[in-house]
Length: 256
Length: 267
Image (cartoon, one colour):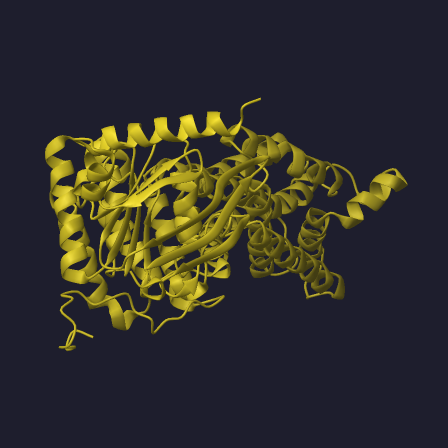
C-alpha cells in the first residue's frame, strides 16, 4: 500500500497517560475505503489509539496523519464520525432531537434544513431505530442507546468512521445487521472504517486487522494472511499464538 | 450538492462550506434550542426554578409583616440573588452532565466552537432567567408592594446580568467537580461567602474592614448594590452604571475562564 494514500498513518506514535505509556511507538497505516478492525483485550490501548486519531487525546507524540492532515486538525472535525464506547447522547432528548442537534452543529444554517432532515432520517433508518425516533434516549435499552450514538456518527456521511466497540451488548441479529451496514458504508460511500472490538469473531468481518496488546501492535494484516502465517483456524487462535510468541520473546530478551 | 453526478455517494457529504470558527450564530442558536428542549422534558425543574423565588419573596413579605422597609431592602437584594443562585446550580449540573456523559467530548470533536457552546448555554439560561425575573419582580413590585423608586426595568436588567454571572460561575466550577455531589457542594463554597458579604444582612460599611475589603472584590456585592441604587434613586446613577458594568465584566471574565476549562484534548 502506498503510505501517502493511507487514510491513517502513524509513525512513532506514543501516548502517555499519567505515569503510564499507553501506546509505545506505533507504526501502522490504515487503507482508505476499507474496514480495519482494531482488536485486543480490554485495556490494551484501543480506545486511546482511537482518541488520538479523532484528536481528543492529550499527550500524543510522534507522527499521526489522518486523511492527509495531522490528527486533531480543525478541518478534520467535520470529516470524521466518532462513536465513544459509552453512548454519548442526551438522555433527556428524543432520538430525533439528538440527531437534529448534532446535524445542526455539523451543517448549521436555515438554508441546509432540508439536507439535515434527509441525513437525520437516513441515519435513524441506518441503525434501525425509526420506530423509536420519538422516544427519549434515556428510556431506550443500552443497545438502542449505543445505536443512537452510532447514528450521530453517521450524520452527513463522514469520510472516516472511528467506532469504539459499536456492537457491545447487541444481540446476534443486530450485530450482523450493523456489520452489513459497515460494509455498505465502506462500499457505497468509499468511507474508511476503524472499528474496535474485543470480540475476536468480529475480526473475520474486517478487511484488515490491527491486533493490539499492551500498547503494542502485534500484527497488521488481513484475517486470511494472519491465519495462514500462524497456521491457525481462527483469528482468535492466531492472536493467542502471537501473544505466546511475544511472551516467549520477552522472556528470552530479559534473562536475568 | 445533490446534483453532483461524478460521485457515487448517495448522500451529501459533510459540508465543508462551514469551516470551524470560534463562533457561529447558527450553532449557538442550535445549542440554546437544544438546552431548552432538554429542559422541556423536565417540567418539574422549570417549575421549581420559576416558582421557588416567588414563594420565597411571598414568605419574606409576611416574615417582615410589621416592617415593610426591611422587606424593601432585602426583597430588592433577593431579586438580584435568586437568578444568580438558580443559574449557578443549573449550569454547574448541566455542564457536569455534559462532561460525564461524553457529549462534551463528542461536541468538541465536531466543528463546534467553544464560544458557541458557552454562548448557547448563556442564551438558553438567560431566557429562562428573564422569565424567572419577570415573574419575581412583577410579584414583588405589584403583588407584594415592594417600594421601588427607580424603574422596575432596571431591576430586571440587573437580575439578567446576575443570571449571566451565575451561569458563568456554574460553568467554571463544573470543571473542578467530578460528580454531581461535588458540584452541589460548590454552591455553599462559592455562593454562601458572597451571600454573607454582599450587604444582604448588614450594610457592607458596617463590617470588619478586612471583610469589607473582601466584599469589595466579590461580584455579588455589586449585584446587590445595583439593586439598592434602583430601589432608592429614580434615575440611572453613576454608581448604578458602575455596579452593572462590574457585574457584566465579572460575568464575561468568568465565562472566559470557563471556556479555558473546555479542552478538546484530554488525558
